Image (cartoon, rainbow, N blue to C red; front, side, top):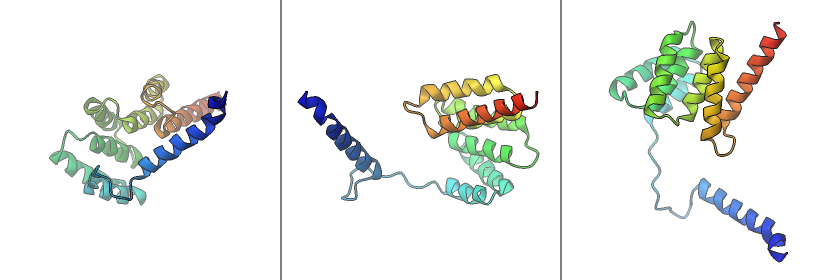
Length: 161
């Protein structure tokens, strides 16, 4: 019975310890942090101002140098999808390329699911939602966002009937 009474305290200690580890060790950890990717930084600047053509140009150049980079394929497809008059065949090509490089790429699963909703393919969007459900031990942001997009899509379909 005493063990059960101390469980909340132990849980909070473990949770706090995990949070401290996740935040990083200000005392000088021996685990090196990966350097920031200058391509992704430039893309973030372009996308924050919704400059989709600039983001596409940056990523097109980056993909010419690193065709095996799943993040670049994912974000290239995203920037095309968000831009004016998206070429959905190109969008799906690059999301699928990202997923062939990294089948567990949560961002690519979320974004391709959203792209499938754009072309009214709810079953394929649900496939990627199910994949995210398997990939995320706890609900992750990608799962939550795609689940909301699917629910919104279904509400709009119901309202239009």
